[in-house]
Length: 475
Image (cartoon, rainbow, N blue to C red; front, side, top):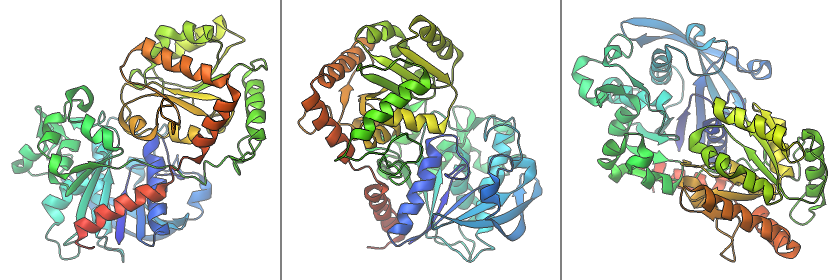
């Protein structure tokens, strides 16, 4: 199979969230299975580090139609983790000072990128059977293909897969940008329109050959208005072409036996290093040593991650005897709350505002439990990473959390779950975890099961390959 994986970010070159992990790991797994998978991303001038810039080679340049004008696009390539990466360069769009997204002209920036991906295929010696586009930033790729490129002799026969990582962000804009910015003729307005706005994700759902989500449960949840952020009507009409595959994690990047970011390495058969990681974590965040269980959280501090539940019963969690280590940033109310809790419980609570990758790894490795009480969670990777490091997840049964964590009420359990979005149901799961923690024989068995859980990309990649082959007419 020949697959082009189009994303607005990808590890290890540019990342702001879980999409980058998937875009860096799935193509790598596809290559390991013997397929030719390439990744295409924007060349973010101030984000991509020099070590990756030094590996790039210039291929060519070409013009890209953007609305009523043509824009320059430079094409660079590099081989990273045995995967061919293509980088699309235009400094007007992708040389920005802060972050990848959130600019006034994001619609134009990613309209350029989407059209450039298709124009690129005319000038390189690679014709994919499948283009897998991801989230709203790449939603225009299947749309442009359907409108402008379907009958192009160089691109004829390509199938389009569109993957929804987070349905909350849909690419909604006013109808006035249809022609001047997106370059889409007025007679296609009904394709782009949804609830009197342009909705890029809705348009991609309409025209893609297949729509995937990042977990089986999430693919069903988004048919419900509670989860869909308004897109349930569009998805209900397209159920026949929608499915969900659970993401995996890069087990080389997240490997407690070899990870250089953690104070001591350990394995499922030799766990002594886990205790050292706990001691060093407490030391680094300024909490006293002790035998109390350490509860970790690494997350964006936003409501849909369940932090309103945490606020409601935080004092109760401390009273159960936990030490809590939090890393994250987001809404001011939650940042302020955790600053206050750090002052209120100086020997029990540590809070670092922001995101520090090395500290995140140390929390995964050094905590005993990891809390994810999400209101919605398309897939979630943190629970899989914490399992890999022998840290027991406490999660709400939603999206990928429901698909990846088996409750310890089952003999094959790997974590603690709760069903309803309720603070005291969450608190009861936290209490169950603490009770097991003090039964060292049972806790050691649980940690062993957790570390043996397989969430490598190998299984997920096979599901994607099956889908790609079905679309391409191969067996």
